[in-house]
Image 1 (tube, helix red, strand yellow):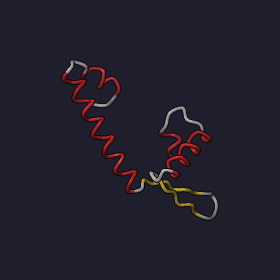
Image 2 (cartoon, one colour):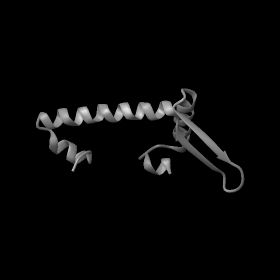
Image 3 (cartoon, one colour):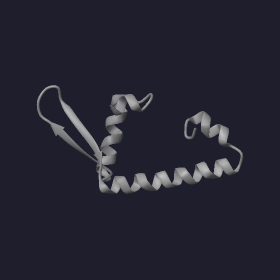
Image 4 (tube, helix red, strand yellow):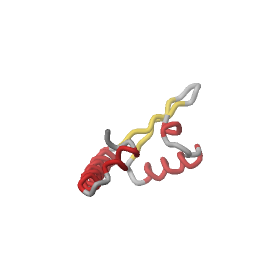
Length: 81
């Protein structure tokens, strides 16, 4: 679940952030009837494009840190092996 994957976030905070992402068109949700209540959230095409751009920026940052002798920090953060 998202709540378990995001360390330290409250359910209220998570739902508020998801609502904001829905409002700007980055995320959509599907609600299922029945018990237990189930809701699936997924990225829209716009959200997928934004995620791709963030992955590119992250890779540029990683390359920059490696070039500047900060590889150990990346390993400590678990960003590279």
